[in-house]
Length: 347
Ligand code: DAH
Image 1: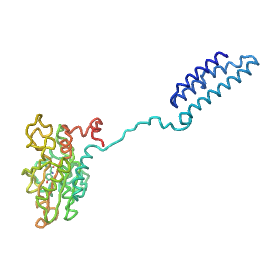
Image 2: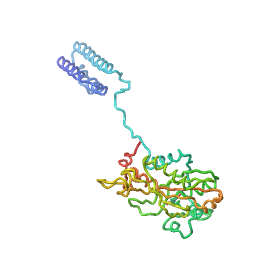
Image 3: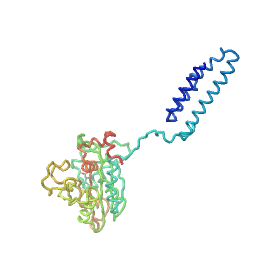
């Protein structure tokens, strides 16, 4: 018995000298004072001892128990915390921090460029009627975008007059606002749009657009150019240029498509490039949006006097802009919820 107690005392003080953390102290407490400890086993031998020995060893073992217990307590105190205190040095449980989706961030960044110029942000309707999506926008009945193969039509409950559809562009926001509010107007309207396109690297049946327009008595194409140049320099790079190419849209006249000079290779003028530019493929220009002066028929459909008021409008695809800005080569990445992709853009 004497020998066993001696060895026990020695191994305990050895173990104690190696302890560094609160958890290790707890481990020793279980090892030396727990139900399965050697000390407990020694206590269980007492009943078989002689009466005289019982007294001695009972006292000795109790003293040892108290000694071990107070040495463990001291150790904890020296570590700077009591057993029931929080160990501030203990690593915290990790938690995942969420962040905005890249498309939300890009949408907000684009909107902010226009907000700084005094544009108001409004939300349009994702479910539209044909009147707002087509007719009021001067889109004739035989236009291909009105075809059932080019648009998601909806069956709505009885009582809803006319045909409803998932909007095929954000331009109906123009007609909704212009019917509701009168000039001067400067509005930005971001949101989802739907087209039954086959999904590939550049197409999706759902994507995002940002619509913008301004209406007032003196609005001209020069305002449109100034606003879009300001946006491009704010959003892409302060040294970009814009190129307006004549185009056709039913709801604007004249209409144009707009290219921005490549903000990576700095446009077509810079010669002697070693590698082909990954963004513009050495064309020097990137197509970014469609625009024009709001067609008088659209103003009139919204009960705005087209003799008195003029307006400009533009529309751009958020995915396309994000792909250009960040060199993303497949639209499907946006929708797959793969955190390895999304994490690269978390802020
Ligand atoms: N709605 C057009 C589309 O989806 C984009 C667009 C072009 C909007 C010209 C406009 C505009 O407001 O003026 O392709």
